[in-house]
Amino acid sequence: MAFTEQGVNSAAQGIVAILDGETFTPLFAAASPMRCTVREPSTLTTWAVEDGTERSDHRTIGRVEIDLPLLLTDDTRALYEQLRSTFLAGTPLVIQTKVGSYQGMLILDLPHDETPDAGDSVLMNVKFAELVTVTPQFGVLPPSSVSDPKQASTVSRGNQQATPADAPTQRRASVLYGIAN
Image 1: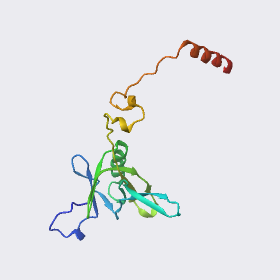
Image 2: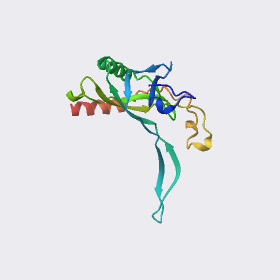
Image 3: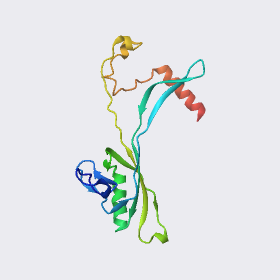
Image 4: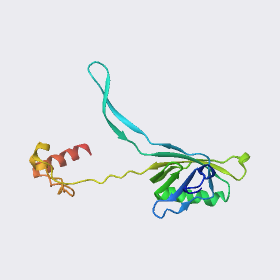
């Protein structure tokens, strides 16, 4: 696995590099990538119109997914354990290909084939997916955006406690509890 450097023939370099997301140090250097398939999907929102045609006015960008078949040949057990511990820890990675770098990638799947005819080598088709986090925003909405003005502020709505039931409701609940049990 190698970095893509300017002035170097990229055909002579490796297909991909897997880097630690925080320190940018190369990981899994002994693994040999066979090929790299990157998917950057999008989805159109569509709806049917009265005349039977479909229309769309919005596109949503999906998460990046990468399939990376790796051939483990040297010290396969230790390399597999390193991949597995990265998978279990949810360590964010950077996948660097010849045409781009993809940050915030997590190992999604670690299937592997172990066959006698492969000798000591192990083929793993590692799947990566982009972790997209959303930060909620709180604030005051304009009164025209809500039907009830009491619901205009979302700032103090985080920790709410239930109110105790009144005496008649508690009495009905205990009677029903007694009948059911």
